[in-house]
Image (tube, rainbow, N blue to C red; front, side, top):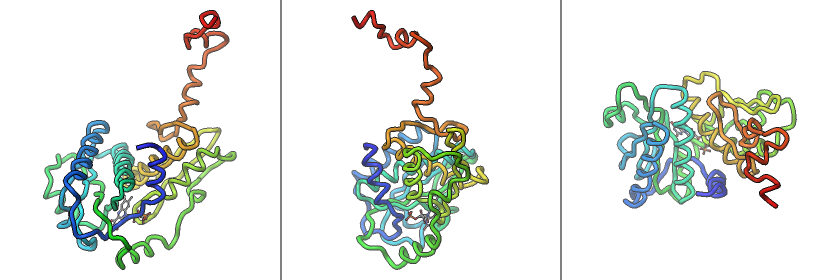
Length: 267
Ligand SMILES: Cc1cc2nc3c(=O)[nH]c(=O)nc-3n(C[C@H](O)[C@H](O)[C@H](O)COP(=O)(O)O)c2cc1C
């Protein structure tokens, strides 16, 4: 999917809890399973696709599948679960499916019993996926009301900012504002100091780090749309590729040698 398509998905995504009474087609299930395999291989996580998720839910309606979002017991794994889980969410949403991250309103014990997860691994959430009803159900409307009484703007998420944010960063943050988070708490705090952009959550060894992983993905997509390619490093600092290149910036005419394009050669 292109970056523009990810943005389209961010713009139209909302948590959906009421699904049509038919299961996903086998073709769609196979594609989601492939995405799960790719995530597990590349990020060392333990996502698992479950065909029929309805037995684990009470207040969600209709037929739907789910991905169990699981991995090692570490802060990094929690963040990666958010980042990679949300990338699957956005791909599903782009292709017209309804999704919802869920960490509370399902029977977690029953899921642990149903799957064969190594004892040192943990379930952080599940993501339901199905054909959403055309209009929002009463349950959905009341849950939306309950979780959206107060909406934290992205400006409210900035803890420190010592100069005007570059447009790529403010746009990235505006997409963070549109991301899902447990009970819509938007717990990530961002800092922009001495030209360095970073983020953190209080209690990083908690499921707030899942929210942070989701926010990280939305931010990267937004910054990229405004021409700043970058990634989050292990200290939770956003590193634009350009500034990383500065480290290798050659002095004087060494540049030509490094680029392999000296004036002589060009003649
Ligand atoms: C990690 C996580 C856990 C969540 N847990 C639940 C849940 O247990 N039940 C539920 O109905 N929604 C849950 N949500 C959905 C949030 O309530 C929702 O993302 C938030 O209210 C923002 O609304 P939106 O997703 O429609 O933009 C969860 C979201 C995240 C990211």
